[in-house]
Image 1: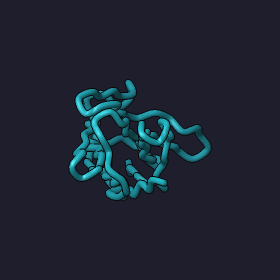
Image 2: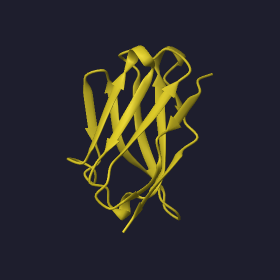
Image 3: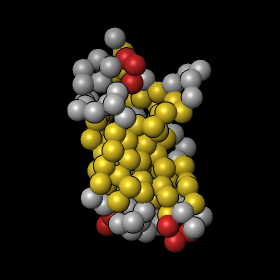
Length: 118
C-alpha cells in the first residue's frame, strides 16, 4: 500500500502563487508516474499535470505557462508550482502515483484545497 500526503494548499489572491507538495510513503522510481488532478465543486475531476517519468512533463492547456510540475525521487515527492493563479483554479487538488512494481496500480492522495479569491 502507498500513502500520498499532500500539503501547500490555501487561500491566495488572484495573481498569487502556491506550491503544492505530495510525498509518497514508498520509494518512487524514474519509471513511476506522478501527477496532479483537481476537482472544483460540482464538477468532475480534471487532469492538471503529470510527470510520467523523471524527464517528461505534460500539462492541461488551462495551466500551461503558469504551472510547473517537478519531482524529487530522492524524497519520493512531486511538486506543483502554481503561478498567476486565477479564481477558476479554485479546486481540491489531488496527487497520484502509478507504481510500476505494484502492477501499475494508481494511488491517490487525500486532496488539498486551493482557493483563489478575486
